[in-house]
Image (cartoon, rainbow, N blue to C red; front, side, top):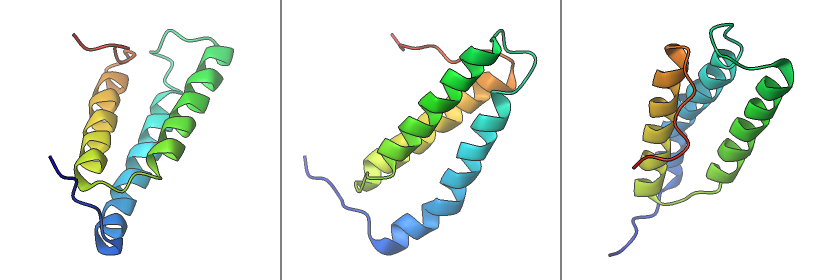
Length: 89
């Protein structure tokens, strides 16, 4: 199975969407509906920053799409006041 590498155009096309997801996730972590202490919120935000930082080096079109899907999936839980599951069976 071959990887299809992202061009500069592909990367720029996803930039606004990724930044929007990043900001929405960070804002959602501030929700009082989430059962998190202040320290836990800071830790979760650091996790999110690290994941997006590592993901920023990704150059495979399919992997980028998967990362965006995972971010949207996580955001759907956060909007409901829930933390996304750690592992999906």
